[in-house]
Length: 103
Image (tube, rainbow, N blue to C red; front, side, top):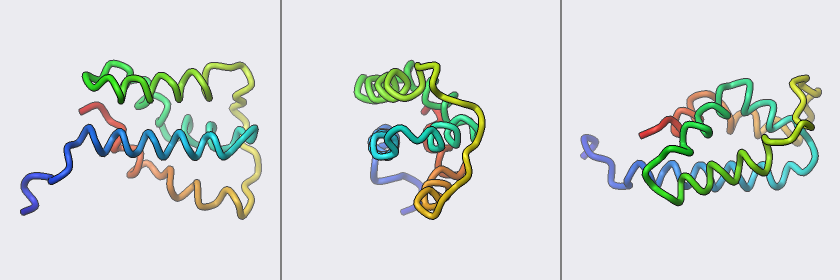
């Protein structure tokens, strides 16, 4: 039962990208989430997904990078976390972002 996943890997990646896109949209102008993604290597993984065979994954990866990471306003300085940002830190742990690795 555990030898073959019942959900295709590309579907999992798509769900993770959709969730990440939603979190980024809800974070508004606060750069903390973008910084967390960059610091744990998530941006590199999202960039790698732009060469994915699945066009929907490519589109989501492109949209995330174009919308949230292409401007000069993304600062590399971490701002202090608040109680509102703490759940995002747990969501963006490296183990979760490994799902974004190319398949």
